[in-house]
Image (tube, rainbow, N blue to C red; front, side):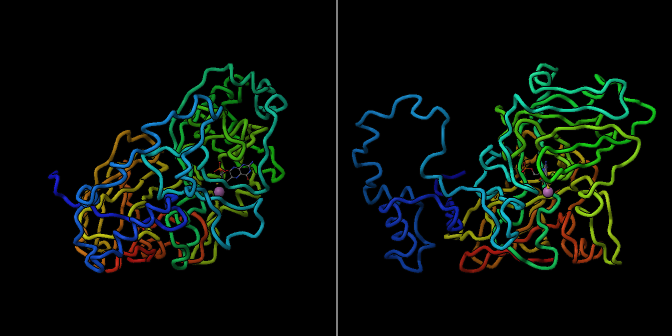
Length: 440
Ligand SMILES: Nc1nc2c(c(=O)[nH]1)N[C@H]1C(S)=C(S)[C@@H](COP(=O)(O)O)O[C@H]1N2
Ligand SMILES: [Mo]
């Protein structure tokens, strides 16, 4: 890549912008609106420009170069930089009016790689969250088993454990977009999505230890310890496959908001099956048909019938930058980046279009490419200043192709809430503003 190659600048959506100092804000305004006025686009790169003017960020004797820094263990538990404090999980304006039964969305536009920091993991609670004393927490394993058991956290954490990286996506992610464009940024269109390394004991280990009845067992009921009594039936096939009874995420104990001290991890399944504050597992010979599986998390089809028991999150992808709410400040090179995932396995390929789906180029997939985990993709793009529509389309290892909104509506209608895995479109206007649109 030649040193003269021009890298376009992106103005972040205001609510997630890096916290600016007074002087950096002044310099930024000079750059964007400065002497060159509308000819901003012709400015040389930041670095070259600053060097020519004698950049004070280089020349001034900065305190951090001449003073004594802060001591070790200033914070017993480290915090993000003060400059990053606008990167927050947030509630979508006007979603639910009861904050205990709501959602806080992960700021995907400010995330790197595939892992979600624990403090930015999305939150979805039906009746608020709790910080449960682990010494008082119990897990019951019962039903069609030879030996019903009660485990303490200590009991569980002595068992053989596994660590696996998986995404979790709420079935309602992108649910506000069924009828039309509803929210401005990727945080709210796709932010009920996170990806962590989870550590715990395999559910199959617990079932084996209880001697479950292999001939009659069909489902396992998982019940949460919060007031919503949230409970879901998991098929015995999936229970024995890759489900984990987890106590840790990203190398530390679960956060209270995410189910501390114990949650179910059901790779590929919609978030509601990942029962938090897990207190009971019951083996049975049929589904329990609990409230959260027959009344909620169902799909209203065009013929007026509800489709029940959708469990797996189909393949989906989204460009996280450039994305809604951002502004492209220059013509020239942009690294288009995003995330792709499939509840059925690995991501095989991601294609990117900059013209609303007429032409597609194959993006680079960054490693690791893991089953039922987020996969990062990148692709080069030269923006020539013309209006553009950016889209990404994933194909997973089963050959499934992510549908357009038109294809999805043809089958599902427009009155659904859940399981919207449409191709997302971001429109780049001539003035560089990026907005959420629906195309195709
Ligand atoms: N006990 C319990 N488990 C629960 C919920 C809940 O409200 N109570 N919400 C479910 C839903 S709908 C989702 S999408 C995920 C969200 O997990 P998170 O808050 O860790 O992101 O948890 C699921 N597990
Ligand atoms: Mo959910």
